[in-house]
Structure formats: structure tokens, C-alpha cells
Length: 132
Image 1 (spheres, rainbow, N blue to C red):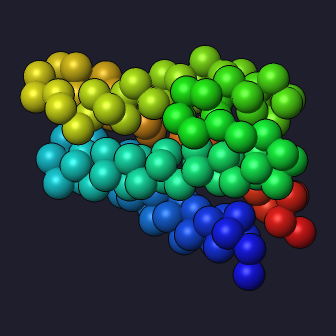
Image 2: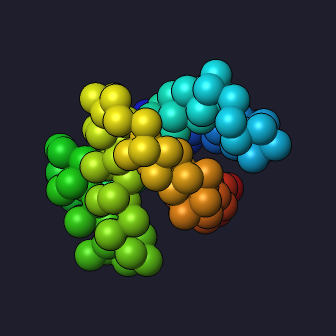
């Protein structure tokens, strides 16, 4: 099994958990435990997502190492329709780890449950297409 195939399998497992967590959160947005679970599942899925991109680029002989560089190269290779959402996800992933202001965290959680979920769902489909 290739590294990319293994990474995609891990992404798919994490995506299913992210999707379930998002659904639970959408049904009870005031639940602090579900908010934390949604943030954590997003952090995991984002990490696996950019690493899937990195491995895919490597299979095409494109070497990049940081999330930002991988995102830019993926956009330039027409893998990602927009790099900005992924750059925003990277920023919010880092912020969610170190942010304690409830208002700011609330804004991040809202994006995790909407904009980022839509983008990661699209990405999930794309991974299915390339993994056959």
C-alpha cells in the first residue's frame, strides 16, 4: 500500500468522524463538548488533508514541505479550485489551538461547520476520484 493510499484511508476515517461531529454540533450548537469535538476533528482532518495533497504532489514529482507551500503548489497544479480557503483553514487550525477568546473561537467553529466542511467534502470526493 502506498503512502498516499494509506493517508487517504486515514483521511476517509477522519472525515466520517468529522461529518458525524458536525451533525451533532449542528443539532446542539451551545454544547461546549461538541464544540471542542468539532474543533479537534477539524484539526485532524486538516492535517491529513494537506498531507494527502503533499503525497499526491510528490507522486507528480512536486516537492513541497510546509502546509502553505503545499496549498500553493496544489492550487497552481489545478488540484484546489481556491487556495484561500485552505490558507484560511491553516490559519484557523493554528488559532483554534491557541485561542481562548470565546467570541473568536465561535467564529472559527462556525466556519469549521460550514465553509470548511463544504471544502473538505469536495476534497473528500476528489480523493475518492483519484484513489479509484
